[in-house]
Image 1 (cartoon, rainbow, N blue to C red):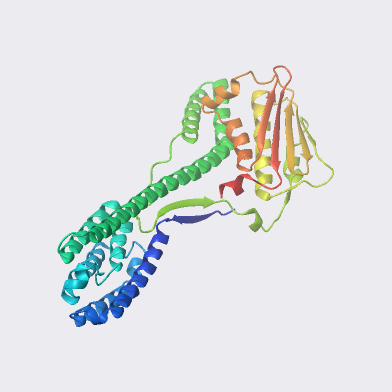
Image 2 (cartoon, rainbow, N blue to C red; image 1 turned 90 degrees about the horizontal axis):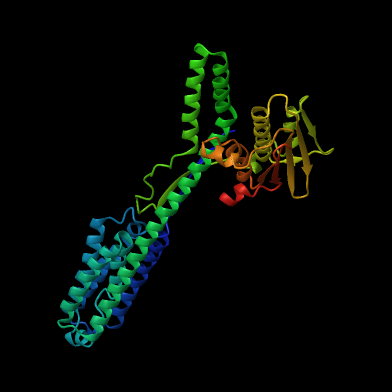
Amino acid sequence: MAKRERVMRMSVEQPLWRALTAYRVLTMFYAVGLFATAYDHFTRPWVAVTYFAVLFVWTLATLPRVAGAVHCTKPFLAVDLTVALTGILLTRVADAGSRIDGGGPTLPSIWTAGAVLAFAIKGGWRWAAFASTLVAAANLVERGAPTRDTVHNVILVWVASIAIGYVVEVARASERTLARALEIEAATRERERLARDIHDGVLQVLAMVQRRGSTLGGEAAELGRMAGEQEVALRTLVSGGMVPLSRVSEDAALGALVRAVDEPDDEDDPVGPVDLRSLLAPYATARVTFSEPGAPVPLTPAAARELAAAVGAALDNVRRHVGADARAWILVEDEPDEVVVTVRDDGPGIPEGRLAQAEGEGRLGVALSIRGRLRDLGGTAELVSVPGQGTEVELKVPKVSRGRASTR
């Protein structure tokens, strides 16, 4: 059954760009409104009219530029800040000196903060500090001398822009961390799935070749030795190794990228629920007794296949560790909320600590082929073994899979 790949794009800064777009438009109209209400007080109103015409066209024409970090390039930011600084310095040319000395607003007014915030969102707090410092210098030149209101406004813009820039940097770091964690989780789950399949087939064949080769001797013994070496190497490969670090969220404009492989949705499976009994019945032999309910035991196709594979892995362990003549029993119980399958044998049991030792040696039959499958389905696998009284493996799977739902 084909799997599909999806790309998840995470960007907590995108809402900031949308807010900045709206802010620039609103503050542009606000600055024009301030000028219109005080038109009669300007000594050279034509200078202000010319500037506001440029500001109006520039603000509307550059809306796509500030909609995201991709198009908000360094040259654009430089020109945008130049427009703001020019408006501040032209205030003394266009407005009356008395209004300036009395604390009147500059021509761009609070539109200037939008240019500084663009620096903060694009480049972080260092870019914000650079832009706000230039704005502070322009305001001091326009006022002629530092006043309380001027210093207050300058510090407010400086602190706010640096704080926003710092928050953006922290958000980007968090995105990269989350993307890396999701990538490791997806790769680990895929590696465990491959390890289960390899254990069910390749590793068992290699182990059998090693044992038979040692028994036959001669050239077969050499073949068995080579098979044993490959078995150890393959076990090491599937049981260890960290996912290599990939380039995630390098582009701050697009946010962190996580590439994940989805299992097919059970809801999209045209076959519908599967009767678990039909998948377990082939395991019944002269040495394996299969006990089932009288009614069908419906499970989703994925859950039924994984549960049947776990039962097969448990029976493989019985044949390998107890012998081909060992007797085993499979019991299926259909509970209201879950399905319980018990696999029991009449072998000598498992010595205490043997499972932990096997897992440490890279022999992951119980850990991956049984417990790993049930964990992915949201179920559990409990193993009870008493020396001299056999081993019992109890597999429980909820009828509504919690494992995959919780990882989406």
